[in-house]
Image (cartoon, rainbow, N blue to C red; front, side, top):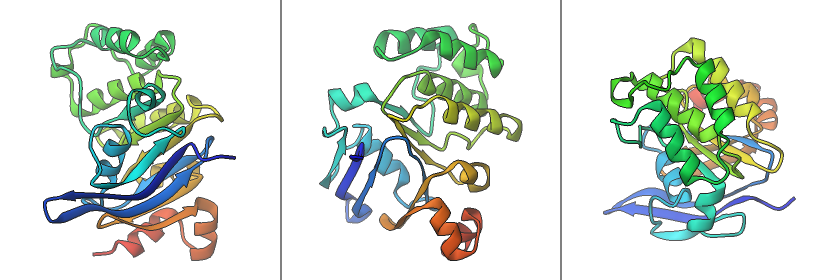
Length: 232
């Protein structure tokens, strides 16, 4: 099976500091991949370059064989780590925006997820808590029928009661032709769902491994392994 998401020798400098340093990996369709690493390891930079929001210093990203641009943005659903919509928007405005902007957006599915999470159409983004804003963005992102989902800390500000629902939403709303890359610190919440893990440290890729193989080799859970590798 050919790789849907390919990253080759990707490097990004901010001044003299390398946020990413020669990162190379590939992800096939149908895979749920955990992007793991401490703060400042380059996870958000990698996702933003892949989503076409940042320019790499060198190297290449290919999504379905294309470099980031109009085509890849049409097949990639990106969930940023902070609210990207105008705070004066209401939930219904956000849904209308996604419906008009993305041809693969399923309005009925988005409304169903919003109702499950008790988000009212008239709620204004600026009056929401950070966790509620994250729930809204996740419903909008997973309402798309994309080929690649890039999710930056989708569980970060969400209460524990909603995490199980959100993870189930992620798992149930992509198909075998799509792939999901999820950046998170909450490894315990997602590790049983992960097919593969990408470990980033100081902008470099430490490992890209099958999750089951990593557990078997290390004799540890992914959470225990992460804590050992990144112990201060």
